[in-house]
Image (cartoon, rainbow, N blue to C red):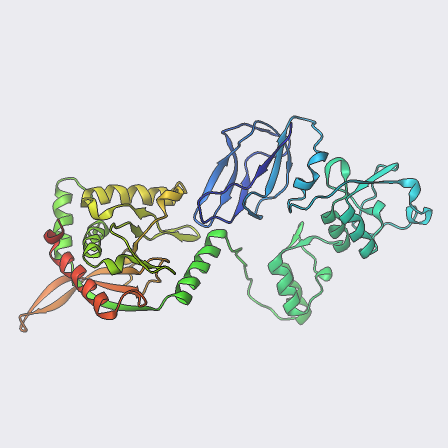
Length: 440
């Protein structure tokens, strides 16, 4: 019996996924528990295992397609199995398409001998033509001869998309290329591609040739699911929150001392590990910075789940160190290393990046002096950490010493936290970093 493979849901926030690569092709064998395809979500790219064993009879959604969760993407069954009864799922849109049989004798003789339009194929079965009702209606609207359409459904059935392809009578054009053509006033039928699809470069090439203008080559990068969600959340953050920020300079001498002392003992500790511990301590003392805004009221968290922003290929993700306020610097180091490694390898699970109460974003390793980070909803704040720089510092109004200085920028939601309280929190973080023993 054939089984329908659906787009799985990975995490509570997931609404759709992008099929990056099919690891089992049509006609190949799929094995339950073995890799079936690669999927990109709003958070990461993961490999999805098959839930069935059998032959891949039909791939409904191709590589690069964005598919809502629970929608059919493939059919797995026995070799040679008739899957015509799964036409509704094969449509991929949840709308049932029933089969309509049209005998060749019912077609007008003049239709049979009518010249075939370029790019179309005559159905080889001269006795019967199978077509879905919607496809038949669309063919009539487009005035396309049914016998000139090549069906791609089971047993050569003509589907709605086959009619659309026949009408276009040209390579498929991407959405971005179509919009570009519309903006330039170019008829997409006049565009010639070098393959089975027309891309923006093909539109640009035609525009350049028609205007006799030489332009630099351009490349359009498709928007991934992760980039789309990052954009949506950042816009949501700026749109819904009253964001403002405070900045402060911190003497990082003690951070250097702790790190060097651990290094001598063979313990590898990053500055960020120590900062996570200090900030966690500060959050427990200033619970409004560890809160979130809801319709029912402001929710104060009596625990610290510290998010650490990690840059990955083509995106950003914030894995969460749970109960960071209860962990030692060594435990924070171990958990942070584990999460970063999983993030960069695409192995994070939903519980690894949900439930955060505050976030630290450190760009010091990229030689950034200071920056303003955007709050990760629904958290009340985010701390941006710049690079450590050795600079002259005036001491006792007359003496000058060289000190390692870090610039911190606190972005906070002014709906939840008042400016004075945010300043007190940031000053406390400075005090803890300069005197780490207060938090140990």
